[in-house]
Length: 323
Image (cartoon, rainbow, N blue to C red; front, top):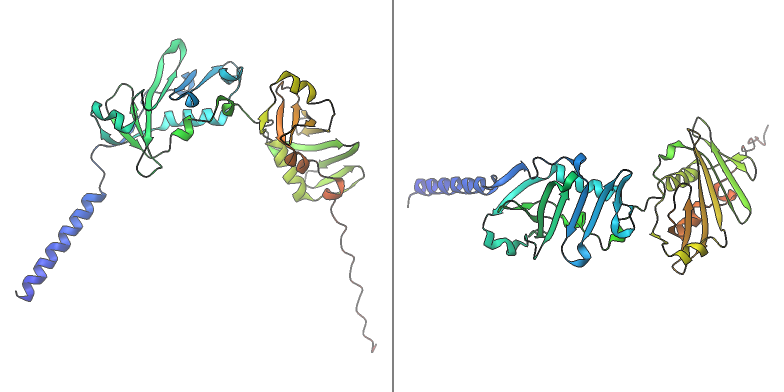
């Protein structure tokens, strides 16, 4: 075979390779870029129901003062968890369509028997979104989904079970003790073992110890403390009446801090349980929070830990022996 013929065949093969590459990388037929729930209005959502296996079920309900967890005595629900669900419903795209065959629903686990059923309703039990979450996709970061009113099964590029499933209803409770902006905290005071420590910040952001004595404070140390206090979260809750009663038999410490607008918050710290957690009670909340003792001790630093070291003395001038 002539060289020219080989060159022509080689060119043809290269061209075919390019065509195949383009075909493989173009959008897959049925790939969707449409909203999965076109008419969903997050402001109308009043109830979220997830059902599947017993440990996967949860009901969240919206009341006048926010979302609640009915299975936990109408305790406030974790707002981040609820917002994550509502964000998904408002923004979810259909993804790649993988099937429209009803007989294959079991394969993708997008039916009531094998998957998760999610129902979001509004006033008068009006259905705002209803769908099935199936098994994880082949890449383990995607999920099969089917709207209840459709035969279409989509593969969405999200691991949805972690958004809708938690180990127990208790894990849906709001663990935030405070949700504040740390920069709004201007004064902090606590007393542990009758040893008071107090700090305040000036307009330049410099912190000063005012108790037990006046001294400059290490700004970085106080900022860590202030950030931890502003976004303090519980590890668990004390719901048993006898435990709550005993939780403050022996007071451990009291923290008080003031915000720029003059608001004062208090945090009472009580006894330690057998899991190395201390009982906490804050103003305006009936809930008794449990926080690991290590984290509590990291908040209650001593004045010596917070006091800025004195400036190094100026070096003595070097004299010339010959002078």
